[in-house]
Length: 108
Image 1 (tube, rainbow, N blue to C red):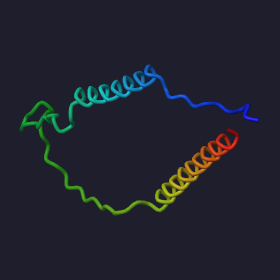
Image 2 (image 1 turned 135 degrees about the vertical axis):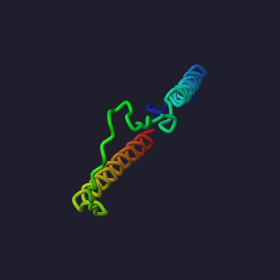
Image 3 (image 1 turned 120 degrees about the vertical axis):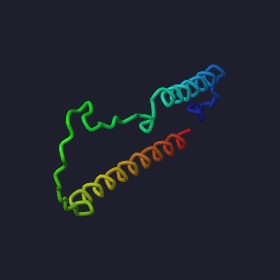
Image 4 (image 1 turned 180 degrees about the vertical axis):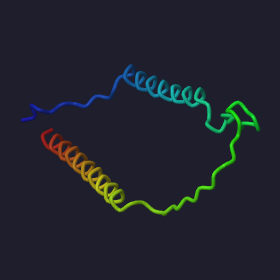
């Protein structure tokens, strides 16, 4: 009658230790990467002088730029479609995971 009855066991000390070491390794790696990469604001931008390193300075030409604010409609549509597909895929995966857990719980 209870042939499929299995007893759940807690993870052993070695498994918990491995998980703890993995989490600490990831945290240490993140901190190391954060410390090694210099900030963009720390970079210096050389300013050319009157006859600087980039050659003689020529007088600038006046350019009139017309800018139109906003984003084209096709980009907005593409972003909305991508967000809808991502939400649908996430919902399907969560539903399948929940259904699998329910069926496994029912058989035990």
